[in-house]
Structures are given as C-alpha cells and as structure tokens.
Length: 409
Image 1: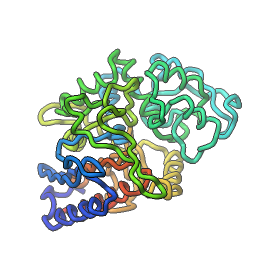
Image 2: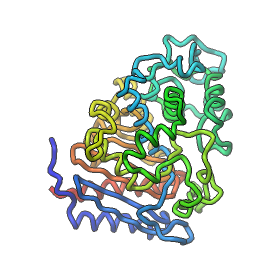
Image 3: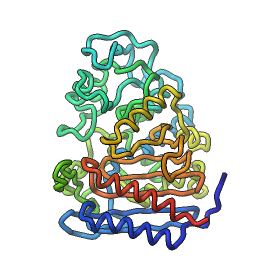
Image 4: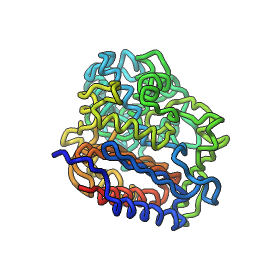
C-alpha cells in the first residue's frame, strides 16, 4: 500500500538529530552528513568535523568516498544499455569479455587452482548483473587457494596495491578458474567491477565518461566521479580505519595526495565513486520516480523495477541469507535484507524497521544509502569512519531506526 507524503514529524526529526549528535559526541564518529526525504520534503543534518582531531566542519557539500554504495549507482550504466538493446540479459559476455570464454570451475571451493571441471555454460550479462557469474569476495572462504589468488592478483580494491588498468585486470581475472558454476551462487564485489569493464567495451568509452554522459550530468550529479580534482580536495575528509582492538583512529586515506586525489587506473563500479548527499539523493529519487528526473527520462520504468526487485532464486537467496545472518559478528549486523537486485540489496523480509521492498546498499567507508517505495522515502548517511570497528555501522542502524520512527502519518 502507498502512504501519503506528509513527511516527518518535528519530534521525530529532533530525535534523529539527537541520536546522530550522540554518536559524534561519543568521539567515535568525527563527523557526518545525513539527508532524509519524503516526497518533496528534504531535511539535511551536518554534524561534527572533517578530521578526528578537529579541522573544518562537515558541510552539505562535503565529498565522501562512497565505497560499496557505488554499486547501486554504477549499475545504472548497464540499465541504459539494456534499455537501448545494446546489451541483452541472456547473451554470453564472450564477445566483449573474451578473457572469460571457456571457463574452468573449481571442483570444490578449497580445491587447488588446477582441480577443475569445464563450466556448464557461458557467462551471461544476467550473471554479471546479479553477481552470480562465478567469482567474488567470499568471507566464508578465506584461506582457500582461490581467495589467496584473488588477493595476490590485485583483483579487489582496498589492498595496498591499487587495481591494475582494466585490460590487465581482465587478463588476471581470466587466468583464474571460477569458484562456482555460472549462475549458481551469489557472490560479492567482483561482478560490480566487471560490469564497468563490460560497459566500457560495449560503448567504446571509459566507464566514467559513459556514466557522466548518461547518469551524472542529466541528474546534475556534479560532484560524483572516480576521483576528486584539486579544486575540490578540501571538501574531502580524512578516511579512518579504527583499530579493531583498541579503537584508535588510524588514517586509512588522506585527502591531499591520497588514493582519490588523482584518476585511478581502474574505474571501479564496485567501490570507486566519490559523491555528496545531494548527488546521491538525485539518483535515488530518480529510481523512486520510476526513472524520471523532472521531465527527463533517465531509465525506463521496467529497468528501474528490474534492478530494484529481488533477482535471486530461493537457492541463491538461501546462500546470501546464511552468509548475512551467520556472520553478524563480522558485519555488525549489516546485510540482512534477504534479496539482491542489480547492484543493490532488496529487502524481502521484515527484519527491522524498514519494509519489504526497500532497496540500496552500504559502504565499508561508513556510507549508507537506501530508498523505500512504500513510504516514498530516501535516506543517505555519509561519514568517514571505515567498518574495521562497529562505530559507523551502529550509527547506520540508529539512523535507520530513528528515520523510520520519524514518519508522520
């Protein structure tokens, strides 16, 4: 059922601000920017500072490293290509990604890399979009030869070595066997980076150029990119990864001279974007509006419906759900939504305050972005504290709880 859009109660918004401020005052979160909207009403809170030891205050135009909240936005590029029939869901990816033709698949997840069987079928566009193409970050398989190889080859972000440029990345990816048969199992991360390579090869443009022309510019997302130019770098906070034991704030990335201060070799759809609350609000509001931004159509309504509803089979769903609920001690309780669409989680059961159908995702740099069609609600919470300690995740939980209790109807 659709609810009216009378926005939020003043009492509820006051409580939201109090809860957010409490996290900052605790010393665990240096600063944050939060945006909540319903219908045409938008409310923004900026609390705290850019650095752990003070510095400039957070502001509405502070630019954050979006980490995995890049996924729901970068997948929009693929939806444009589906709308235009330049990609088809069940076409093999081999013509564009020949490195992934004729795959071998491990007999068991902990097999040596040469203990394989041939893939039962080619990898399709659908497999890449649903994160089921056969390779991914599997935290339940740490220590296996295949996970070791993924780390050694620099195939994931956040390692000391940056990811190589796309063709070399593809060469390394193509040298590995798959962990699972194509389409068999949901796996995190690598598919979202692969998607960017696919888009670039189909369009003959860089992934960022295509995103800019078809998504960012039409939506007015002027601060969204894969790096922060010098004239904006003072708007990027320091990123911290607190020590998991002592809680001490370790700098993970400085703004000036840091990882996002120059264009990367690899434009990572899985976690490479920087953005602001207003840019992300424009994107998620477009999804809530069925692909429309004002009078301009960005995506077709069916494309939006496809990406924002659960795409996993019951078997794939069971594996993802088990990973989420059996690893809460690692994830601090995040990721328990049940389903997955294209590039984002989709809530398929009610496990907390948010209703079924809510879609979006969280980032390991302390970012959380979701929209809820039932309440016509968007929430965006951005901070600079990585999830090495539970501080930013607990803040997210409290943000969503207080956001939902602020609904006034």
